[in-house]
Length: 239
Image (tube, rainbow, N blue to C red):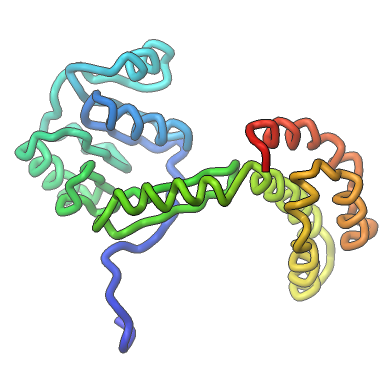
């Protein structure tokens, strides 16, 4: 620990779970939310519960997740990468935590921090942009309140901005410029009015700005192909 610094209980990290085996224990509303969140990131989901919500049942029928129609049993986690326990049975929580610890499995027990080796932040997503807030498990209610504020602050225009910057970054990195030159380009791209242009659907101004910075690397055809996607993202609500 660094001198004078406070020891944090949790290390912030983003996990890549695509194609990995994830287990959700429980079949209620909390389990439904967690399973859908894991599915949205490409996880291979198994739900263990004698009952399912109607939406979880529909996902099972559609082949989106595997369902084990019974209560959790010791040994169920052996092949899991990540586990979320959405059960209010204290004894089951204790046994699940012991098994996860034995096999070094990532575990979150909903609303019971003492059994968790990771916790889930309140998150706002705008495409590939993710803004998360965590209170270290001390006040999920405060985290939810802050998330609602962030949802208003970060609208769909940020998704569009990130699409543009990602497209440009790929092309710039293929050039033979130095790392310092690339850094200057990326910083110059973030004009203070960029989000205003996006909100106003001012694609002509955006094109002009990109051309001014990128010169010969500017690909107007690629930008034109992205505009339908831009319009779809912005139609969700006004900036």
